[in-house]
Image 1 (tube, rainbow, N blue to C red):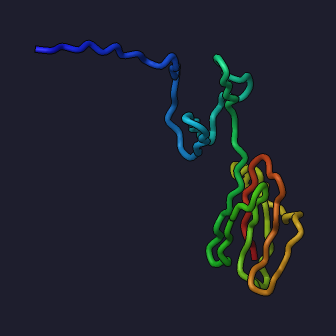
Image 2 (cartoon, rainbow, N blue to C red):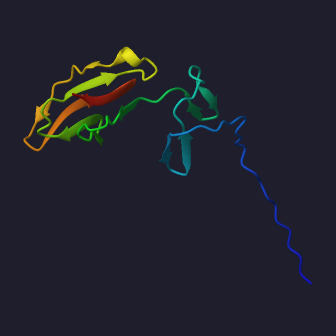
Image 3 (cartoon, helix red, strand yellow):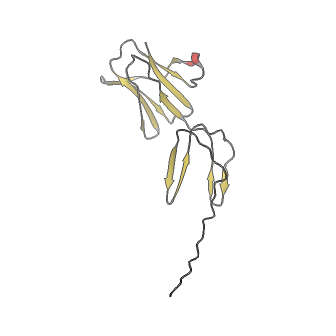
Length: 138
């Protein structure tokens, strides 16, 4: 009978805490990946160890809020820009924005320049930061 002993080694990495939240995404490169989620309350100092560092915090969010009876809004990404678009013509509708949905009177006419190619109206936001919510209001 032949017996062979194997030595098993664990990696020196650990996760000291975790939380369950919604949303988020993953960034990957080489053999490592990091997953994050929106709404993390742990902004501030970077967590580091060895050659790696992670800074927690809030991600930028741009979202559309569909108003009943209004044309559909769409959000697309192009490089470092975000494009919010809706069908043209959309007579009588005005694009509004709000940075905080908890503030009901925070809706105001959007200050972004609106383009119209005859099929769609759109705005382009270069290098967005913070939260922005959009809706069409008649």
